[in-house]
Length: 69
Image (cartoon, rainbow, N blue to C red; front, side, top):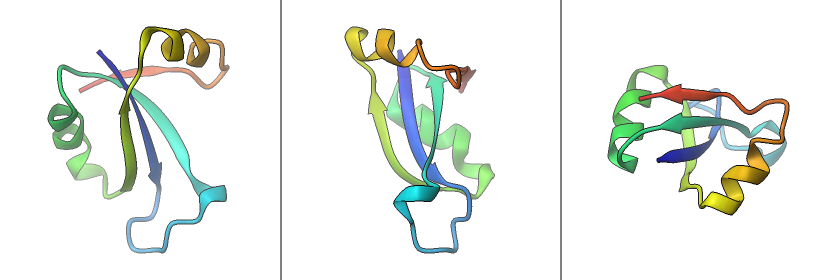
C-alpha cells in the first residue's frame, strides 16, 4: 500500500501550510510508516492511504517518488 505523508521539516516550529512537504511511502500499515519516520524529527501532519484513483493522480506529479518503510 502507498501512503502520502504531509509533514513539516522542523518539528519544533508551528506548522505553516505554505511550508508543508509531502512524501510517499510503501508500507503495510500506518503504524509502519510512523515507525520508519520516527528518527527523522519531522512534524507529521497527516498520513493518508491513497486509493487507486488518488495514486494514479499523484503519480503524474514530477515530485512523486516512493520510499519504503
